[in-house]
Length: 125
Image (cartoon, rainbow, N blue to C red; front, side, top):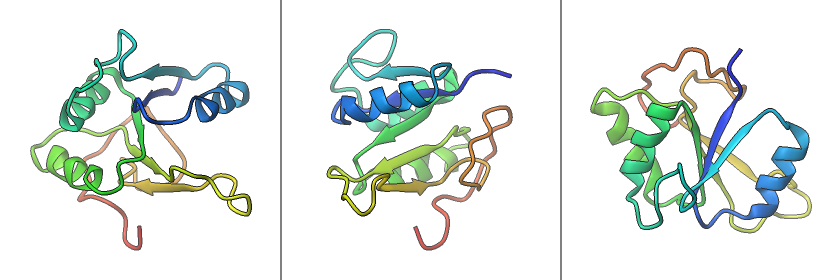
C-alpha cells in the first residue's frame, strides 16, 4: 500500500508535523515553500491541484476560504485526497483540535487508494 502523503500549508505548526512523523514514520510529509512542494505565495487552488497530482492530503488553518476552494476544485471535476482544517491554537481539553472538511471518501479514516468526487464538506462541519 502506498504511504500516506501530507502537504502542510506554510503557517501550520512544525510541532504538528513532528508529532505526526513520530506517530507514523512512513508518512511522507511536504511543506509549502520547501521543494518539491509548491512555493510560498502559491494560491490555495494551486495547492489543491498539486495535492491531486501528488496524492496528498492538504493541511491548513484557512477555515474561511479553503472549503470554498475545495468545493470549486471538485465542482471542476478534480479529485481530492482531502483537506484537513485545523485550529491555529489547540486547546488543552481538545488535544487534537481537528476539523475534517471534505475528506474524499466521506469517512474520518483516510484511504488513499481510491479518491472520489464528493459534493463538499460533510454535514455539520
